[in-house]
Structure formats: C-alpha cells, structure tokens
Length: 198
Image 1: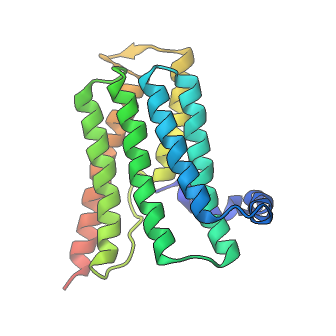
Image 2: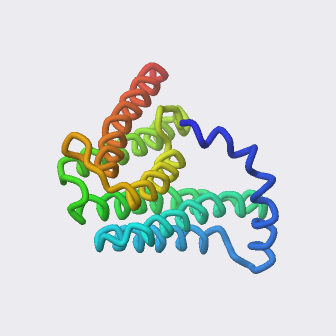
C-alpha cells in the first residue's frame, strides 16, 4: 500500500471537517452508509456511461470512507461492530464500482472478473489474517485508497482521451492492473500469514 501511509500527513486537513461532522451529529455509521450509497450510484452511473458523474460519486465514496474512521477515532467511538460494518461496506463498494465499469461494456468482462477477484481476494486475506490471530494485514502493492484515486484519475483522463491501446481503453488497462496486482497482493499476504502461523 502506498497512499494509506500518508494518512497522518493529511490528518490536519481532515480535522476541521471531522469537528464539523461531530457538531452536526453525523455518526461514523452514517458516513459508512453514505459511502455505500455513493459507490452504488457510481456503479450505476458507470453502467450508463455517465463517466464524469460516476467519477464524482467515487470521490464522494472515498471522502466518506476516509471520514468515517476519522470521526470514530475523534469521538473515541471505535467498535467491533463499526469495524465490521466498514469492511463489509468496503467490499460491496468495490463490487458496485468495478462491476459497473465492466457491465457497461467499457471493459471486457474477463478483465472485469479478474479485477473483481483480485480486489476481493487481497481484501479477504488481509482480514482473514486477523481471524487466525496474526492481526490485520495491510501489506501489498495496491491498497483501497490507491484504487479509488486511480479510478478517479484514470476516469477523468478517459473522459477526454477515450483511446484504445492494444484492444483495451484506459479503464480496461486500469482494471487489468487491479486484477494482476490484486492477486499479487493476495499472494503476498498469504505468504506473510503462512510464515507467521505455527
């Protein structure tokens, strides 16, 4: 993961927004559900080829996803239930967004399935490590924050330059990247946990 390492550096920019959310009585769970709704909207918008609005919805998802944990920490309201909800919502968000992209026909479905399985397996092995007592594993070459930023950046570039390179457009190459590096990350996490277990 790369972008997740910079969370402490951007905390100063989020603090005023976190305090504002708390004053407005916006709970972490509300932000988590808002992130889920934004991802579902993003998937639908990608499906209908409304890329500019889809990218905006992904940005809302990313913002709410960053805010829910920050608000929970500030309120000292972190809980197992909240963590469970957050992880479940994140997986559905991945499904909505990636499926929306390839179900639209923008990307061949085999590439979309590769991306979806790579993303889900890398996330699953990160949480499964915690289930077997090793602790949550975030290691790997491509984390969720990286994926969301890449979807936004590549989505914007695709709007202005809908080019095809070797049979795939930019979104196709992005999902291929997600698939390959998602599975690489999954194998990295599997190997790390395997060596930690007795």
